[in-house]
Length: 194
Image (spheres, one colour):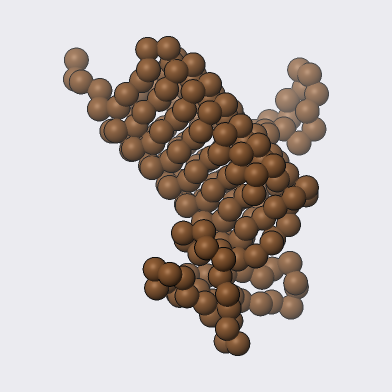
């Protein structure tokens, strides 16, 4: 039998072998069958990953997080302690309405104790403030806070606040350039990495 290239704590239950090298799964975590986990992930104590979930590489899942069927997490995502994903828009006992998909895009960070309502996407490198209740999709590079979560400002790949000039461009400390695109509909502002 080939040696596993990932670590599973003796007090974890892991029902899948589709796990990338250097991934660590810690105590009292339960990963169900048909889950795909990329390389170099860290899944902390008391987490639960339901069947058919996909987790990319270099993902950090802090303590006490349940990730339900229908959730896809791309590479380089950070999930803060006890953040919550939902999977049913109209929850009733014994009356599940079917899988509703939620996408967490590359580089997104989700703050501790925040709630992500199912059926939305969290944009690339966005940041969800601690305790926020996210009811709508979040654009790339947006920082959102509150209940319901609203855009507070735009951030860089590293999380620093972006300050835009008269041409709607900004640079971060790493030298990356960003462009703020403004549409007629005020709710559709978004930032792109140039």
